[in-house]
Length: 91
Ligand code: SF4
Image (cartoon, rainbow, N blue to C red; front, side, top):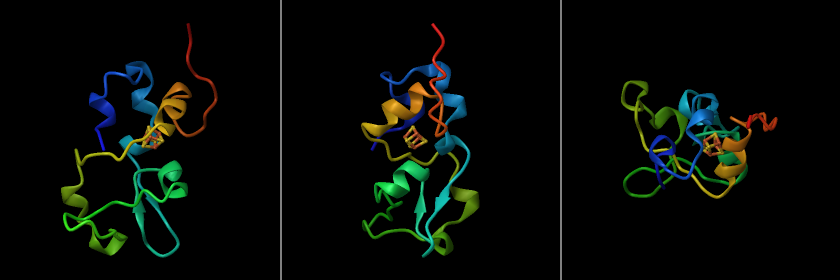
């Protein structure tokens, strides 16, 4: 895991539009993810004992600045400035 906002390999101009910066994704059983991509990849939020977190486990007052779960798919997402993947990079 790494923080999207501190990863020097991600294009900084696209970071503000990322879903993981201001929204969560919730599965039909209540599992919590940083974004829809992470949900599709099964990257569920984890508690310190590494069990999966559900919506009812999360205190909204304590999730600011939490570590975002990232992976190789984030390079494609950030190139499109978020989950719409619209090719938003401007030269
Ligand atoms: S795919 Fe990665 S960069 Fe994109 S919203 Fe999800 S966690 Fe953030």
